Length: 361
Image (cartoon, rainbow, N blue to C red; front, side, top):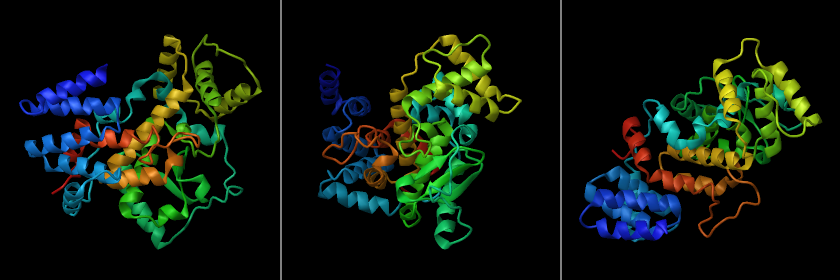
C-alpha cells in the first residue's frame, strides 16, 4: 500500500537525500498521524538541515503526545524558553487553503457568507443560558488582549466577549460582531492556552465554520446544515429548487434566512450560491463538519505558538472539536484532533511561523 511504499522511500532517502526523506515522512503522517517513528525521523532530518524552530516543533509534538524521551524533553524545554511572543503580519489565502482545504468548496463558501446572519436564523436566549457580557475585570482584560492579537492575525475586525457556563463553551456565536462565549476556566487559563482557544474560535469565523462546532449553542444537526445551504440557494438563485422534503423545519429556516439577509445581497454570498447551484452538489454534512473541526484544530495550533501546549488544549477541550461519541486513542486524542500534530510538523506551518516571527529566537 501507500504507507509501505512511502516507508521504504523514506528509509532509502534518509542518508543521501534528507529533503526527500522529510517529504516522505510528512506524507506518512498524513496517512498515519500517530506514527511516532516518523516524528522522530523528522527531528533528526530537520536537525541536519539546521532548522532549529522546525526541530522545536517536532520535539513539542512528541512532548505533547507524552512520547518524548529524555533528550527530546530536555531540548524542547530549552528551546521553549526562546519562543517569540508576538505575531506580526497576516495569513495569506494560500495559508488558509492549507488550514482548511474545503475553504473553496461551495458549501463552506455559502456558510461563510451566511454566518453574520446566523443569530437571526437561530436565535439564542442569552439569559436562559446564563450568558452575560462582562463590563470589566482583570481576567477579561487579559483575555481580550490575547483575543485581539489572534483576531488581527485571522482578520476578525470586531468581536464581543461573554461569560458562559462551562458546558456552553468555549464557542462562538454568529452575528455582527461575533461573540466569544468564554467559560470561567478559559478566563483563568495560561496566555498561550487562551491564544489556542481564540485561534480555534476565530478560525471558525474566518472559514465560515461556526455551525460545525459541536459546542455551538444553536444545536443544529447535519440535516439542518443542509437546509440552511439549500434555503440560501432557493432564495437567491432563480429556478433553483431544494432537493428532499420541504418540511416545516426547512420552511422556517428559509423564511428566517430570507428576513435576515440584507436587501443588498453580499456579492460573496451570490457567487457562492450560484456556484453551488451550477455544480448541483450533494452535501455530505457530516464530512463537512469534520473538516471544519480539523480546520479549527489547525487554527488553534497555529495561534498557540507551542505545539505541545496546543496538544494539551486539544485533550482538555475535546468537546470543541469532536462529537461526544468520537473515539479517543491511547494518546488522548480524537481523529479530528490529530490534524494539530500533523500540521505542526508541516512545511506550511514552518513557513507561516518564519514569516510571522513566531519561532525560536
